[in-house]
Image (cartoon, rainbow, N blue to C red; front, side, top):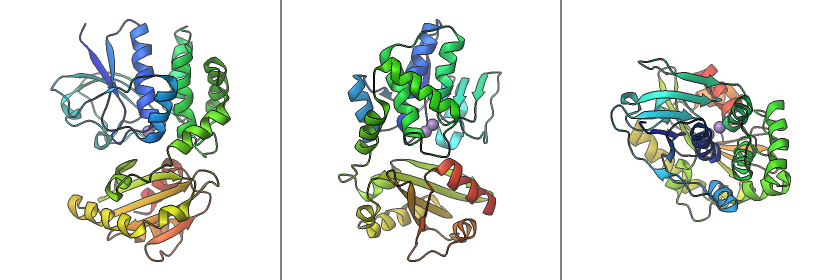
Length: 306
Ligand code: MN
Ligand code: MN
């Protein structure tokens, strides 16, 4: 049987990594030959989760061979996917994002649900197939949902995510609030990252009509501390804007304790941001009270105002 590889998006986050590992487990148990891989380095939050659960990180893949059979989790946009994705055979997609610029030559299994995390969908797929989830797999799905919903505090969270968290915590034998806060905090230690690395840790490229934008996000427990590095972050953003011809770059520093964000906004089309959020940028920055979700609270605002 030809091997399929499963991966999430570039700049991998905890959902992307955990859901790829979980999907490979699920498909193997359904008789398929599937291996989980990753498209980039792990962040510290994901590293914490894998260490805690004693799970090896997936192998790194830089680009796909022509005709390679692949399964996508946690993304569908080609701009966020592996190099040469357009030459691969996409056999399955399990996702929870908008569908954008997605096209295949052959029929496929495509499942997208408007829930807070890919793992919430995967957990349902185990149940639908009558498969029990073991402790480690439960821990991986739990970590993914905690990460994507910021411990159930993000507006992307649905009732299904909340139910899944409670059931998975039970199976994993974990107190999800204690474990979750520890895991999220592990991800906020950004002291040894350069500014270039910071803006690339969790960065999504997106088209806003004819404009090219990037929206990057980092989690912190202390916005002020991160803002002490504003000058070097801006320099890194400007370099990226120039090298990649970006029209807009939004860098969101999200306070996971108080659920707010501080945005640094650069590029020649910052008016999209200003119009969308009804705020004038001061020294390239604006405070966004209550904003924690790029997917639900930042990207749609930019898309509507571009
Ligand atoms: Mn993701
Ligand atoms: Mn996700």
